[in-house]
Length: 192
Image 1 (tube, rainbow, N blue to C red):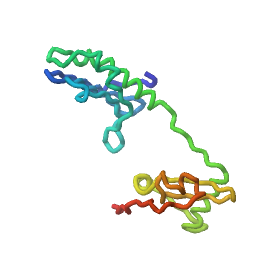
Image 2 (cartoon, rainbow, N blue to C red):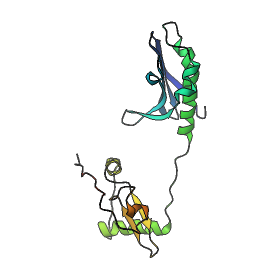
Image 3 (spheres, one colour):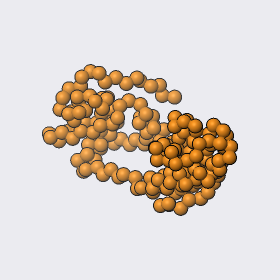
């Protein structure tokens, strides 16, 4: 694997209709699990690698198509050693998860003009001697509600910041060159 792993837990079991294998490891300081289940039918089977989020939910990092492994495994039986059969596939998923977690996050660099536009946005919305700290909960709330943030730099030097338009809106598709089709509507969530 790309990053070192620390074994945390594993579980396996088999019945006459299914067998499963779960392996939990720590990769790059994150708790990751590979879950595989082999049922009698394809649609009763699955293989995913998940990471434990800060909210103690499991979020999928990678999945393996059933055609990559299902046909190479024996049908369910109480005699199946699930760890031996599914272990190599779990290892492959964990390797993919390690590669994903090891990838550096993309960096966004603001142009000097865009940086000045953010300064102007702060100054014109709060005041010229403004200071504003946005905590992680506000960032999450703003990301989860309304439209996606779009930033358009215009030829005249102006900049538009908007969350008021859906991705398919003509305004967004033309980067502010066309008017909105008035079909952009987002429910106003309550702040709890």
